[in-house]
Each structure stands twice: as structure tokens, then as C-alpha cells.
Image (cartoon, rainbow, N blue to C red; front, side, top):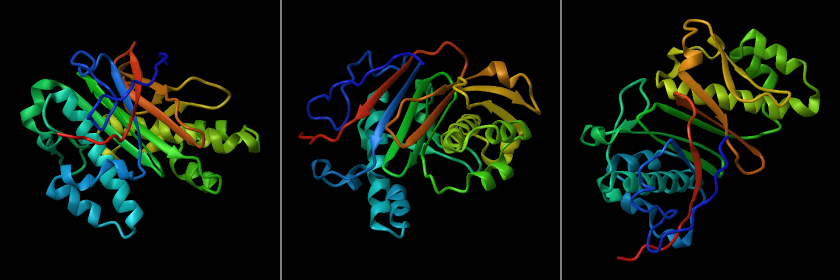
Length: 259
């Protein structure tokens, strides 16, 4: 993965600094977002659409409602910089079984994005002219990895997992899981693609890669897969259409916005 750093915050904006040139994705930008509400953020619901507010209200726990609001506020503010509009003006379209995208009025911008969150962390991947998928997972040592692997991993992936030591298995499982999820999300076809119909490289310090696709071998040359650097206790992966991408990573920060 290309070495990337964190950009400093821009005054009066709830996000990392982006000048006009930076706001045009060169390759793929990955934004790390803390899901925890901050007093500096003010009311995160102020920028959200009616639909987003209703979706937030469906969560039973206040913690989950607040995290949803923070994440979607951050996503709006980040995407607004790429589109050169106000966060309130960003709009989305989605269809059953298809991942969310920008509404038709933003189609000429060519911006593709994908969002993933787990526990206290969210990732937003932004690309121009290329389909993209990202996945982040909190490493839960009590997760039933053997049961899930048997249900969703390919025979070859199960074999790799079973060959590892007990100390390696949990970490390796989440490496495999995030890589598979990122690929599914990049395709944008939801559950119509069985998780055991393709294989990813993982374990024994193997670099992230799509190594087999049962129904379409051409997929191997269509996509690039990357492991992302994220805080301890998380695993994350990125899948992007094409090759030789320039990857950059930013941290979205919550600063008071004054107008």
C-alpha cells in the first residue's frame, strides 16, 4: 500500500483540510471517522436528510443512533468537498440490492464512494472513475470464527485458516472476512454473489489479493485489493477497480464550524 499520512484540519470545517486540488480524488482516498459523538460537533442531525434522521431513529440504543448520525454527518461533509457543494445539498440514490451512490445530478463528477463501520470506527473510501468497496471490522476474540468460516469461506480458505496456530486464527479470520466483504461491496450486487464463490489471499503475511473467482476468472485482473492501516483491534480492506492506485488516508476530525 502506498504510504499515506493524515492531513491537518481546515479552519471552520468539520473535516481534514482539503484544498481544491486535494478535493479531486487522485486514485483513492480513505477517510477514518471516529463514530463517537463530540461536544464540538454540535447537533449532527442538522445536516442530515429526513430519511437519514428516520433511519437513525430506528436504532433501539441511543449509542447506535448517535453513531449513525455522526458517521452520516461526516460522510456528507467529506463528499461535499469533493463535489464543491454544501453538505446539506449532497443527495443519494439507492435501489434494492444495489449499494448506495450519489444522486443523478452528481453523476458527471464521476465520484464513487463506499462506507463501512464497526464499533467505534468508520471508513469512507472515495474514488473517481472506479468502483470501490471498503470494509472494517472490530476484532472480537469471542466471535464464532469456525462456524462462520464453515458457512461462508471457500474450501481453500478454510484450509488456510485451519493450518494456522490458535494465536493466528482470529487475526487471520478477520483479514479474510474484511477482504471478502470489501470485494462484495465493490461489486455492489449484495448477497447475489456467494461468499464462497471466490477466494482471497490471507494468512502467513500474504498480501491482500483476489486469487480465485469461480464464475468469472476475468475478475482477478479487474480488481486490486489492499489491506488498510487502522487502529489496533480492527482489520480493514479496500477493493478498487483497476490497478496501480495511489492510496491516501485521512482522519476526519470534529471541529466547531462557524459561519
